[in-house]
Image (tube, rainbow, N blue to C red; front, side, top):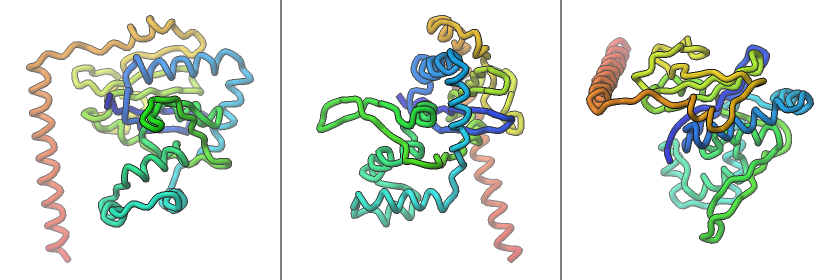
Length: 256
């Protein structure tokens, strides 16, 4: 299910991971995956220390590192529509599949599995193999792990539905939602105008059961009328932003 979200790790007062995920960002899937991961992480101090050390391998990707990945990946693909797609800033389905295989840290399908990739160097995920659904192993390349910094995605409450923040400094797991009728704290997203809002917080040294976790992550009910009002308001806001952008471009062209 397309439930877009973020998986964030904060350590030593810095954001080390801000991974965008396209699918299943809800508590029952991504939430439980993260809950199980941090439970095991805090089960032994040595495991936690190891994960913190491996975070030092993570760096924010730049254009050069991403271009190197694309060039390497394209040694194994040959799509006739490549040039056309490149001009649109897109890649083909074949290239996307190869990117996931070679550089899973750069792919939208990885989501919260980025935590496993950093800690273990691999993760397993179901996929199609010769038309059959099987578990596939995805591994990170040796050396540095180049991550996309998707932190700003949290500023879009329409599309960012969940944000899962593992704060290793405060030993907290913070859960943020984009749902418009919840007006919690902005928390670590305080620098954005209208970001996702804090729903609940868990102590990493005293985590609940799976059922208790899911129950605490329940979102407020939304009526049909509230939803329609919100959609209309957002549509108007986006239309205004589009008009303002056109005016700025026109003014820049005139001044030149």
